[in-house]
Amino acid sequence: MHAAPHVQSTEKAQVVLLSGFLGAGKTTLLKQILSWQADLSGTVVVVNEFGDAGIDGSLLKKSGSDIVELSSGCICCTLSGDFKQSLSTVWEQFQPLRVLVEASGVADPASIMSVFSDPGISRCMELSQVITVLDADFWQAREVFGPLFYSQLETAHLILLNKIDLVGNDKIPIFLDEIHETIPHARVVPTIDCRIDPQIIWGRKAADAAGLKPHLFFPKFVSPGGPDQGSVPGKGIDFVTFSFQSSRILDETCFDRFLQNLPWEVFRIKGPLRFKDRTVMLNYVGGRNDCIAWEPVDETQLVFIAWGVDPEKILQRLHPCIVGR
Image (cartoon, rainbow, N blue to C red; front, side):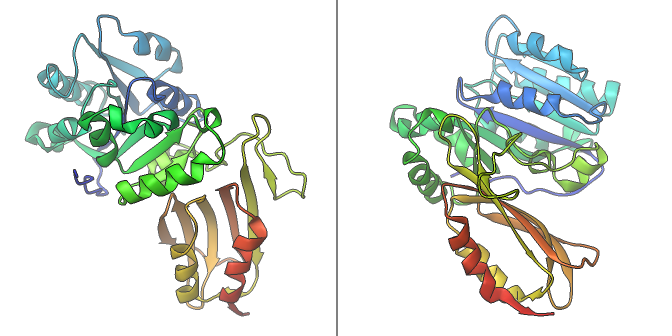
């Protein structure tokens, strides 16, 4: 397996590489990102369309971000030199804060990643995240796609299991288990139309700088059981959102065990946590969690997003962690 690149925090332009097999939804994800209401004036988009016409670029120029198109080849092989030159030119002309690279569906991210170790590129840019969009139907037929398909997944920090509305609900938990077992280092998030929290794409610091606020993966949840529990309307999708609030302190060791034993179907938890000696902001995504120091708050407030689980059963696991005032 290819190792996912190490992520460091620097003042260099942060590069997010969008990867995925043909038709998985990379351009949909890119359009979602560029549609967010935020200051993206410091963002440059590099699009690699494998063919003679830059179709993706023509669709995205309405976004207002600067678009650089590379066509008639693939940036992992025949256009590797052009890609390096384009990145150098992007830095010289724009000195961006962020760069989004949409690779073609036949590109191997492992080869693209090597470009960022070039001294001329590494001085001004670093690859902060590789996101691979995976068509759920393709995972089911993965044996026919060959090494490139697996390389696109193995190099990813984050895998978006996309188009889940087009496969049976009973298959999603199976797919999540299989993907986590095959690519254990990656975060895995099921999506429809690649809708996702901006902070998962950019990280909290960069998202805050661009004015991007965290939000639920889907624009609206119906709430038959009250304001903080519901499912996504339409298409019979079994996503649920629910919350936990407590003014009492949580035991940190117990809470760590709670996270470690969560089913893969719980793929997003966000909010402030009160422990005995500190308060942290939890950002849990697809089996991986990050906690950063946070200002003291009066209560723990966690929002959960999950696939087809019983919220009460999940919250019952959390209650033993409540230990004091």
